[in-house]
Length: 118
Image (tube, rainbow, N blue to C red; front, side, top):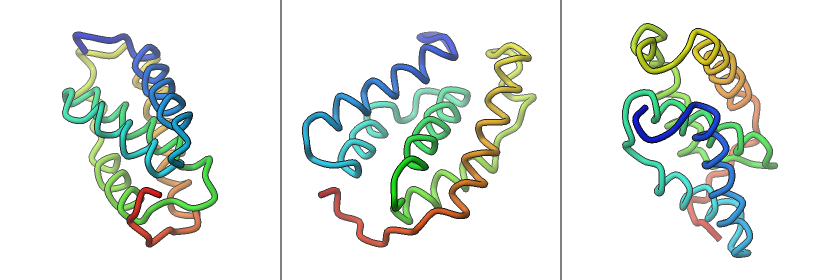
């Protein structure tokens, strides 16, 4: 994680989401734009991004099926040992707990099948 600290990246993702949400184009638009801004940053960063986007999604009434499937698939591939050089033990533990909450939460949300970011 060359460019950000662990908490800093979570905060930045949430700030971007709030900024895009303020444009009054809706939650789906804000999620899509935020995801786009933070894609392909690196192995560890990508897990943080998916976790943060998953946490944001869980606050909504419905979650687009594409996000549910994509985030769940990617987060299920998390390997603690692969992030050990970039995160502290406390950060790894926190990320692991957050990932588990997101995966479990996405199993129970109401599914939105409309792909349009209205």
